[in-house]
Amino acid sequence: MTAAQVTVLATETATATAGREGRARSADGKVDLQLSPPGSNGPGSNPEQLFAAGYAACFGGAVGLAAKLAEMSVTPSDIKVTATVKLNKDDSVPLGSGFFIGATLNVEIAGVEQAKLEGLVAKAHTICPYSKATKGNIEVKLQANGKDMRG
Image 1 (cartoon, one colour):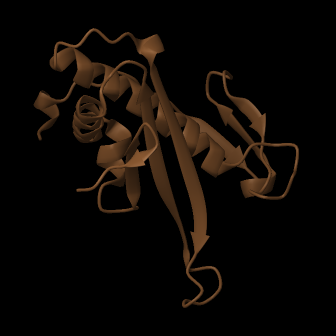
Image 2 (cartoon, helix red, strand yellow):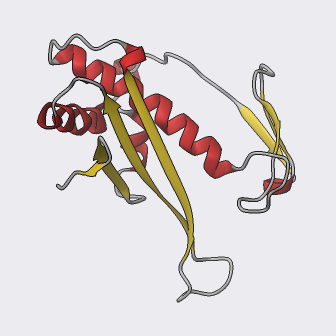
């Protein structure tokens, strides 16, 4: 893809200081929050929660677009996406080098039959920028109404 083929729709910038025990702030100040390590019961959020929130929101938009392409009458408020992000450690590698994340996306739309919902979820996975960014990098499991999708 050449630069002439790309239209930049948004540019967002955020800065984190002091890693997982610091603070994250977007350039416009709309995001400004304390960070705490996952599982620490600290007062702040953590990168895994932030990734889950971003992926769920982005994937929900992609489901909406997939529904529109399929000419289904689904409104954004009908779509519920729950993203579960796990921080994992591969114990077979030296300390500090074996951390990785995985994600599960569960999509629910009331009144949409299972097969059609699975089709929307599969299509959304080809549309969503987060899915494109993670493809081949992390394991992403897809679910429709809490049921694992295969393939």
